[in-house]
Image (tube, rainbow, N blue to C red; front, top):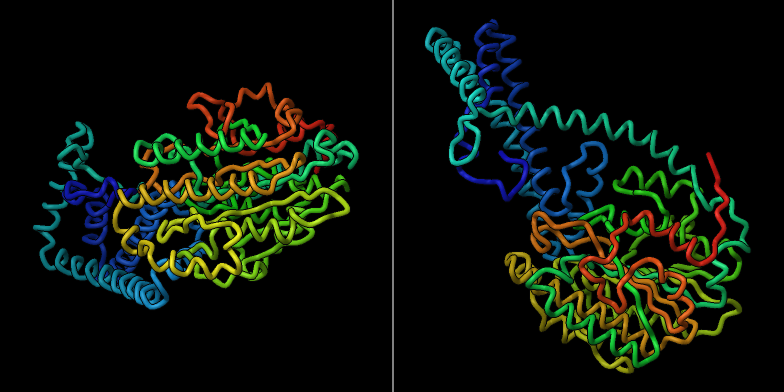
Length: 520
């Protein structure tokens, strides 16, 4: 099998596997008992490699990377939860049971098949020996001359390559753990005194907002871009009339298609948090997150509004949040929209009522996570009157009339169209909130966490996401005037592209923070 779904085709299965030729030669040379044992073990190994191959195909399709044998098992539980939210508990349980049965049958059938083939070889050893020699010569010849069938090399060694790549991946992962732990201990602003942190933002209500799956494809893909670009243009003008101005650029995310927390932690920690192991290392460290900077300064109260959090969230400490409102603390009585626990407009209204609209002894620094643009993009909420939101019950009819998740998942074109609509909705909700409730001291920083899955963004999409800073006070944007960012909410195609982990230090420097390195 190929390593990606897009490469799947008949020609891939009409190849001559070098591993089978070597295996036949070894089995022919062994007595019966060790031959049967080796054959059974080989069948099990073949089944295991097949499962890993399937996982690689799935991970590349959804997350733009291969499966990590050390780190990624925990994500299978998240995948099951996502299916349950999208397709329902019954369908998910049936699918899970089907996968378990399929894997067990694969291991059993593969072991039986190789044992049976080894017995056939033994019964016809003379013919099998000649056939093995001929096959070996053909394989070497095809490999040497690069003979292809329908554009695919006829001589294959994909099982050996898969085994080698998995072994190297495990080794690299274990080495990376130790190396990254050292990197995480070094912090350019780790020892900066509180009064020297972001002095140029004192008195401002800071809001850092992540829009789920808001990627470059939303702005530049021919199917999604027309609607999204129009929304960005309309909302830029609306904000301008309200006295707000914006500058926008691009960041290259550490993740793709999912694992949003890796994007959040990369942009806020200043470290390249590209896998679950690095995430755990960072969360257990005292590395200074961008949001914690405001808490450490002593000049802000800090809060998180996170409708996607539905269980204990110990990361609150790392991000320096005094209070976190999770999915169960925002008073929502309406329906879920697939994975998303509540519409973004409702989340933002609750943020206004519980945080931004209240009087405080200090300005607020808020981290807000918007979830309405999370896959499968069906059904999608619609904007309602801000005064009509209530407890969210108004969304029952909208949810019932929307697309069914299974219908969107099954149709690539519809997935791309609905994804674009979900981004339009999230951007509209956020900017309408700012237009309606923002003050002269409100500063909004919003960005995407990652690109949508390959089925939507394409198999060769970048990992870039848009980022915008919006403020009414012109001095706020003057501080980043030398960044080369585009005016408005839409970053130009040739606007600067930074790795996401560079944003923290550049932001801190732009707003007057003094570096005082801390070394582990």
